[in-house]
Amino acid sequence: MIYSKTNRIQILFFLFLMASLHLTSQSICTWHPEKKELEFSLERISGILNCDLQKEHGKSHHFSNVIHKPTGTKISPDEGSMAGTGMLNFFRVLIEGGYLTELRVEEPLLEPTEDGIICTWMPTIRRQAKVKVKFTFRQPNIIDMDMWVETLTNYPAFEILLSAYMAPGFESGVYVAKEEFGPIEAEQIRVIDQPMIHGIWPFFPRDEAGANLLTDGRHQKGRWFWRMAIGRRYAMPFGFFSKNGVDAILMGRPEDVYAVGATYKGDPENDNVAGHRSLYLSLFGEDFKAGEGRHTQMRMIIDDFGSDAKKHKELFQSFLKDTESKPRSFQINPAPKTK
Image 1 (cartoon, rainbow, N blue to C red):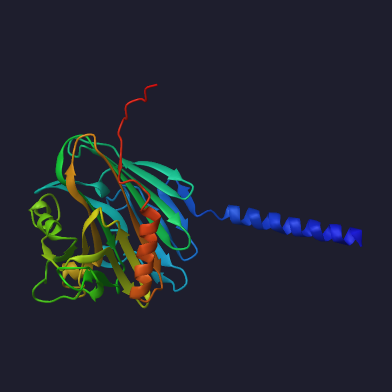
Image 2 (image 1 turned 180 degrees about the vertical axis):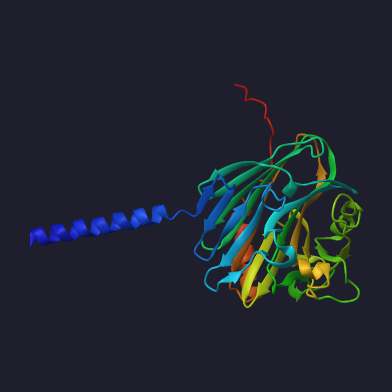
């Protein structure tokens, strides 16, 4: 009897050890240095973060082969006119009435981590700001982005634009305030082509100041000239695309997102705006002083939420709770403490 009990304990311990080793071997991320690719696999989504600027369509970071596992839905735009654009990347760097560069076409320093990767763009003559982004993959379906910005000169109305592009068949949605003035009550709307906005890019500002930034001429400089259709003020800095019940959601902190962009549903074959199937977060839009350090967070979540507004609001509240304690600024080269 004692021998039998001892055997059972040994067997249980062995099974526990094997299960622990199996879980350890199933890491979330695998870095392939020869290809500069980060392969990720979560419970609900999988894909590749491509970081080879020379090879991958001239982009220093973009997501491809992103799949929603339970349904097999392709999320990233790997085919068609948007092939190679990638699901998610940091696009323009802008200032008041002007254009500095595109982060996605500049070579960053790459530092793989256990659950993601850190991309650091060191300052250049054209962009006198250091930008660091940490991509972190979290179970079961989350891509988190932490961004730190250090400016070396004064920049009026400094902005970094985050862009996200979807596979064919996805349709956009945003949350706007039901009333333009007064308390904000969120209303989910779908963005659909109409004569008033046809051929230009719908953006939903946080307030009147945000609306003014969108039209100060910054987007008619540099590459890819475009104009914005200014929509109602957003209720949440939150946009999404959906297809057959699967939602790809992008959100940021209200304090740091001055506008949300979402292309309309239209004829993707003959309309460049509709064919982009893209979301945008306009970050900061504030005056940055030399030596100033700013920190913010963004999140993408992908799953079969069925465009449910209640669930979307719960996801956004969870994001706010996760980020509320994180400081929005930091000291650069702080003076040493004195005794």
